[in-house]
Each structure stands twice: as C-alpha cells, then as structure tokens.
Image (cartoon, rainbow, N blue to C red; front, top):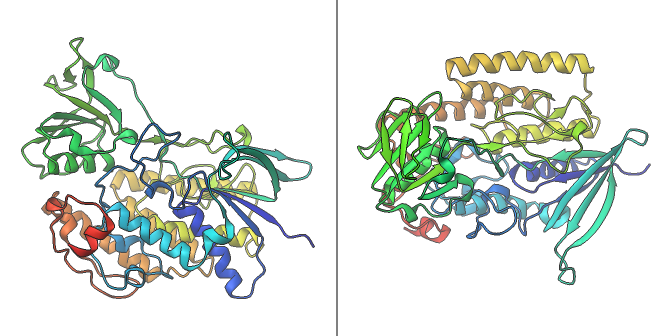
Amino acid sequence: MEKKRVAVIGAGPSGLALLRAFQSAEEKGAEIPELVCFEKQLECGGLWNFSESTGVEEHGSMYKDLYINGPKEVNEYVDYSFEEHFGKPIGSYPPRSVLLDYIKGRANKFKLCERFVRHHTKVKSVTYSESTRKFTVTVRDYSAFDYTEGRLYSEEFDHLVVATGHFSTPNVPEFQGLNSFKGSLLHAHDLRDVADFKGKDVLLIGSGYSAEDIACQCYKFGAKSITITYRSFPTGCSNWPESIKEVPLLERVDPNGRTCHFKDGSSKDVDAIVLCTGYLHDFPFMPESLRLVTGNRIWPMGLYEGVVLEAEPIVFYLGMQAQFYSFTMFDAQAWYVRDVIMGRLSLPSIEEMKAHSEKWGSAEGEALAKRDVKTFQANYVKELIGLTDCPVTPQMVDETLQMGSDWDKHKELGIMSYRDHPFRSAVTGSLAPEHQTPWIQQFDDSLESYLTH
C-alpha cells in the first residue's frame, strides 16, 4: 500500500512540533507517512528569526532587543529541556536569540529539518480535488543558485497542515489624519530597533502585549515619553513610570501632522507612532473553501479541537489561537493531529464537531468576561493531551498555570522588574538562577552576552 503523503506549511515552532510528533511515533515502532515541510525562510524557527531589514519580501515581525515577556518555563519542551540544551539552568526571561537557539536545538537533536524540511521554498497555491481527495501544492524553490526567480513545481498530498502562524500580516486600522502624520509612522511588524526613539515622544496605538512590551523597551532605551492609546481596555498595568501614560483611543491627527487628539479630549505632540494593532489570519495560498477565517481569538471557530478544519477534516491548522501557552500547546496539538492522520483517533460527525466548537466558544466568552484566558487555555491543552501519548502531563500544565498567576503578580509589583524573577522548571525541577544583569540594564540581546553576563 502506498504511503500517505502529508504537506506541512511552515517550519516554525508549530510545524516543527508536528514533525517531532510523527518522529516520536516512529521511535516507538510505528510506520509514519511521508512528511514534506515547506519553509519559505532559509532556516527553521519561524517568527523567532530576526531580519535587520524590512525591505526584504515578507520580513519577520521580530525586533531587536526583544526579551520574552513570559517565563520560559511555561513553554519548555518535555523531551528537550532548556537545561539539556544549554548544559546548565539559565534565567527565566532570555532574549529572542536564546529562544531561537533552543528551538533549533530540539530540531537538530531529532534531525527534523534534515529529514523533512525544504528550506527557502515558498508555497504559492494549494488546490484540492474532491474526486481524488488529494491536494496539489505548488511551490517556488529559491534554494538553487541557478534559479534567479526560483523553480516552480507541484506535488500531490493526502493531508495538508497549515503551520504558518498568524503574526505576519499587519492589521492596519484607519484614523483621521493619520496618513498626514509628519513623524515616523510604522506598524510593530516593521519595528526593528527601539533605540531609534531615544529622546523622542512616542505614541503606541493598542493595549495588548505588543504595546506593553514596546512601551517598556522605549522607556529602557531612553524615549522622552510614551503614550499608549487603547480602544476598549488599558493594558492593565498600574505601575507605569511617570513618562508612560495611557489614554483612550486616538480620534484624529491634526493637519499640522504632529498633534494627536484622543477621545477623552486630551492631546499630545509626538515624534513617532507605532501601530500595535495586531495581525490578520491570512492564508492567500489556500483556496477559499479551505481557508480559515477568524479574528485573533483564543478559540477560533470552525476548527474542531482547535485544529481540524470542520469544512474539510483532512486539513489542519496549528497554532491559530491567541496564546498564553505556545510550545506546550503546539506539542499537544501536534500529537493530536498526528494521531488523526495516522488513524489512531476517529473524528466524530460534522454536527458533533460543530457542537463541540460551540461549547468551547461559549467557554471562551466566559473566560474573556472573567479575564481568565490562561485557565481556559490550560483546560484546552489538558483535553488534547488526554487523547494522545503527548509527553506533556496534566501536572505540568497545572504547574505552568501557577507560573502564569505568579507572573501576573510580579508584573503588578514592577512592570520594569518582573523579568528578573526566576521560575522552577516543570520538566527538570531546577530553579532558574537570577540573571546577573537586571533586565532594565541589559542592552545586548545576543545569545553570547546573555549566557556570560
């Protein structure tokens, strides 16, 4: 019997999780399908790769000097701890370079990229034949030097997994007069170095984690003032330094191009505006009938168990949720998708799938009302791991949920100092050391600097 073929689009953390899930089954003696992972970048790691330029096609959204804003212990690989990778316990809030090295370390240990990934290969289109129940994936391969425009080719697959993430296509709202702004105007997607704002008055539009972190970074690197303008709710931080203010939503920018007016009647002259307004779930390569349509939600409707496309249950989407858990949740999702593809788990009827999604959708509303997204997502991860042999355990989920609660308390105590708190690994039991340099004094985001200073 001919082997099934599975196309995986994206070799970021969620795509790599699926490759690892299949390989884990293979280690236990199972025969796995043929896996082909298409990755448009030169290396695996997805979002965590950093490009200096924003002029390249589809550059990433990572900016210089970004340090993770939640303890690394919440999203530690059970089969590859931070301690195993670095040979010792390290601080709980490392910079992006450390996370990228860790992601690549797991991929290298299990030879995931070497076996399954076709780098520098961008998916251009996907078509589906209802008669053959197969997908045709057309890609452009830029890896060969003798193809200046890339080599275009197509292959057939039995299953399709979209693991491209949802932090690539900026959401850009309109405000009166914004296009006439005379200062620096950009989306967080195009931000590369907050040091550019030293001595300047900066306006951040949005109140999510992105705005919160960029505000902290701007303060750290010497911005004169930072104003955060929000639509529905402020950030929730009650201890901002004096130079950081939160105000209701921007209404308009004056024709003079510098003065911004807000809904509470206040105004502010600023030198730079950064749109921290989130991203769109965007899958231009997918046919409309197979395209996930959702906003940024902790429970995207239309996905059974958060991953199976109800409209066509041989299509899967990984990592499409707004996230507290990331690596942990990706593994839970990956093991589940693996078992569905391999026939270890049977899917219910379409009606039952939709009813299941409706139930979780209602729970999402309750979680948002209580502002308790972490517990909601912890319960979701527990449901998935209860269905497979995923190495994440309910006890680990409970421990990391407690870490999330402690993280919130640390932020309340000091928004500029919460990254200095250590956490204990739920995988190894080791307590992270307090990093020798407080976060507010760390101005080098390189891996080498973090591990030695």
